[in-house]
Image 1: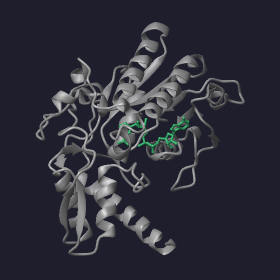
Image 2: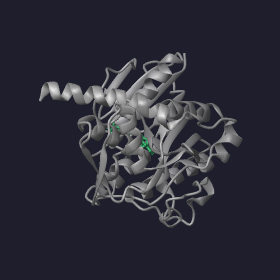
Image 3: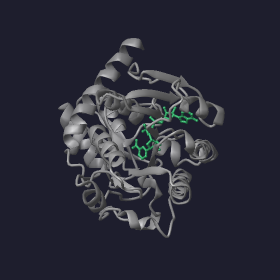
Image 4: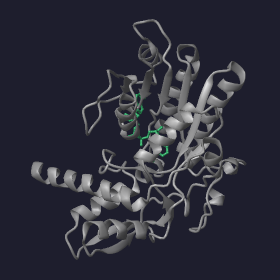
Length: 326
Ligand code: NAD
């Protein structure tokens, strides 16, 4: 039986990844600061602890059999949506905590056979994302580097750390740049939620004919990838022999206004948009998928609207549950 350690298993993508690996027959250990917020883990073992502490990482990597883990998925990061990353108030934590976890796992390279690292579209330079009609970010666009947030700089540093581990030590690494992953069982309120979840929540909370708030003019564009496609990309990349950073994202670009309208249409509500000041991030961003298609013979294709339908359904249920508690 193959073994996998999922770091960040109490989070959104990690929680889904545990389920996916279990469905593939793996023995899985999860590790996180906290248990999963929305569902009971299906991991065979789960360690609660701070991976900034190297001793906790060693514990997470120790198997009773004395064997090395076949696969480690390093998804733990101090992160959030624009309301967390772009205000500047969390910069030190974001850089220090996430980099420490990655330094620990690269240092402990003798204790696993292969490691996956989740980087982000946030590593791409700000100046090539100033237009709403972004043509798609190619992997080679990362340099000369100029990410627009400390979160992006830490991701870039850690990508390079894993790449150097491969070059100098020969460790097997896989590096993906995720572009805005969304779906059920993700953060949907509290400031760390991403745009699809925020739009679904605002629409679910709003009555028919009401108004929701949008940060900025709402013309900023993004692409969003449904969670199942992200998991498919992770697993295909892990099984490939490609060691360089590759985008895992959608090429379906949409403005935030149109995303809000999509959520309203799914809900069957007529809703108007009120534009207010708020943290924005770059003006336009989407994935360019030639590299993943070339290397994995696969690229995401699931329509945004289908993913939004599933996400809206789940968030509307959470909103109802919360009302019940309030
Ligand atoms: P998430 O915040 O839901 O999950 C991250 C998990 O890491 C959390 O449960 C958190 O408690 C845990 N964690 C953080 N610091 C830790 C520490 N010191 N010790 C132990 N656990 C710790 O985020 P997510 O959306 O599931 O993202 C997973 C990974 O993918 C992250 O590395 C993130 O940067 C990357 N990523 C995500 C997106 C996206 O759109 N969701 C986009 C780009 C990159």
